Length: 143
Image 1 (cartoon, one colour):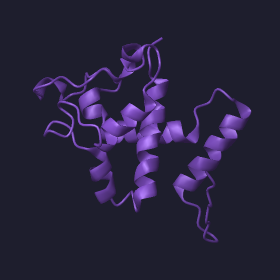
Image 2 (cartoon, one colour; image 1 turned 60 degrees about the vertical axis):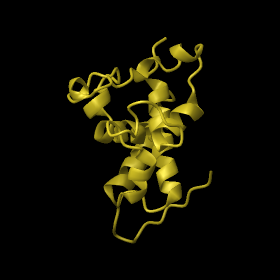
Image 3 (cartoon, one colour; image 1 turned 30 degrees about the vertical axis):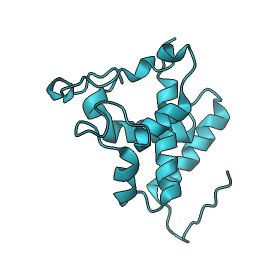
């Protein structure tokens, strides 16, 4: 995927500075998280922690109030024969693959929610946001 970065003379946003810092840190330390993983962590903190918890194990502050306990997102690969189900996770997040408790009042379909968000100006931005969450979750899998 080719990305074009537009910089207005004299203006450097925090996001652009953050992106450059992430690329530079990754160049110095290949084990550093990718910018997409970092973005996914930020999206997870903003949208998912309240139910799934900081640990992604379904232990968020609202978890006890829900009819169905939120999934332990650290065991997705374990429950899928050791392979992280990237496409399935994407579909569950975007709402195209319904699961109990997801989109049924307990959990929003994030594809629709993100498309209405001011932070996601178009379909590609929504896809990128969901992909960042998928990549972040792939790094949280138990061994």
